[in-house]
Structure formats: C-alpha cells, structure tokens
Length: 111
Image (cartoon, rainbow, N blue to C red; front, side):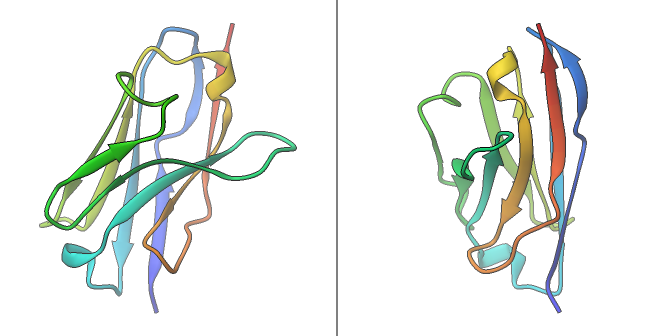
C-alpha cells in the first residue's frame, strides 16, 4: 500500500517562505518521478513542479524562480521549498507519484 504524507503547510505572510515535505512509503520511490500540485479554493488542481528519479526538475511558470523541488532518496522524502510567497499561492498542496496522491497540506499566504 503506497502512502504519501504531506506536511509543512501553514499560515505565512506575503514574502515569506515555507518548506513542504512529502514522505513516501510502500513504493519504488527512488525511481519514481515525484510531483507537487496545488488546488486553490474553488479551483482545479494544477501542476507546480516535478523531479525525476535522476534529479531532473521542471516547474510551472508561476513557480519558476521562487520554488525549488528536491528529494532525499535515502529518506523517501520529496520537498518543495517555497520562497517569496504571494497571496495567490494560497492553496492545498499535494504530492503525486504518478498514481497516488497524498491528503494535502494547506498553505495560506496573507497579504
């Protein structure tokens, strides 16, 4: 049974930073491409960033230059470092391994 558990969300002021974590269990984490998605209130879920098993990364336009995705294969954790946060980044953030989703972690950015 694959489990993805996100953590690290919270309330932060605009311009602040948060680091999200996604702990994976029960999967071949080392080879999986791991992604982060966000879902703002009342809107569709959208892709933020991914990192391949080999460490190649890619970002949505809104995340480029502000967010950094990384992974620790020894710990089966993928991170999303978010800097220069804006109110429009407010959303539930989910990690995804291509098949399974975590339960999400709420990020709220106040102006």
